[in-house]
Length: 262
Length: 208
Ligand SMILES: [Fe+2]
Image 1 (cartoon, each protein chain N blue to C red):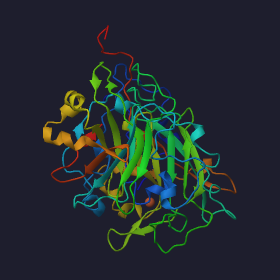
Image 2: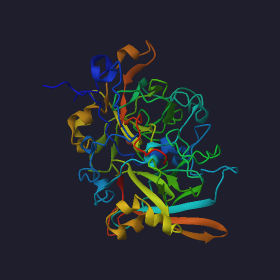
Image 3: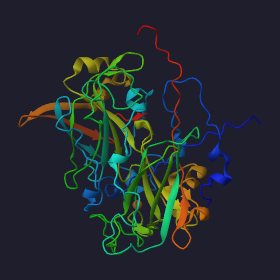
Image 4: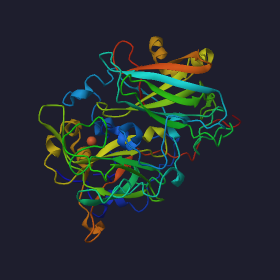
């Protein structure tokens, strides 16, 4: 199991000049569904009754798809990207302190600026602060387990948290989810909306996890695995890992096909 | 070998899982953490347009409502303009309307509600008019990649009949899966919808 390549080792992720398609309608690149788990994935039992069976209707992007909600710093609070402090009551949460950072890019390699990234996770024992989670590992009184950030002008985001623990779930009797952090990302248009998960390099549960193994493309699966990023660690404070997220690319709108006078 | 194109690939989607509320609607998970929260109320007292309640359920292949589903909606304002720079139509922007909201279904009944306004007709990039509609995105445990659909309005029959997207649907019988039904309840306008994930009435979902 390889982790997502760090940008310094992968020229795809630090292209100096983003490629610019010269002619377009502002629509997003066709989604390559072989990069995603299929809707109907019997190894993930909950998907069986919750997956559409008709073919999706392909929709040429209109203004309804290329636009999407715009967020700003006014939507966030000062501690929103600090999961070690944003729910602390009488001390820090228990667990391995980590920094998670990376860029939100599109498929052309451009950073996606000022976009909202939301994240949530279990605590270090694998327990969620959620009224429907009944796992026996204890709630941490100092850990909420969620946060959010806006990317900067280059698409960069970061947050601080504790490493989540793995937890059991009802799929087979002895099914465990590898440690993971859930991510929700917007992009600039509603058709870029994405929810995904980040896993940790070296976790032995990754290869046996049934949801992940439904992704048909091995490289796509490996891109969900964040490597340790020792250079970004804070000495004597926190380890770091790096997670880049790629949203669909967008065609430019330099030329329009609208007839003059319309 | 030719030069490589070197496009990046979109990150794989993963299910939102059963605990999606923690990250997106923490109050539903049972705690209060953020100073400011997103919600299912898209309007302020000063938003322009006809106030409507949008209410419905998402139904699985056994006929059971999903009780852990999360919906987001994205819509134009009453003048048909999206609050986003890529909408270059000429309708007036409404500073009191972002046009986006999210809601989790009720943990008992599965009911999802939004308080919003009825959007205006949309002008597409070729200058054609599209029927008023609301864009919907659906995530939940068991949904591996978010589902995209639209809601149109039952009282817009003429506009719906001319809508380019509704007309892309080959079987007229399936178009009705996208129509929210207007009614009045205690003086409020309610549009009701049902999103069927499977079965003979399966909702039309889009590959956008
Ligand atoms: Fe999870």
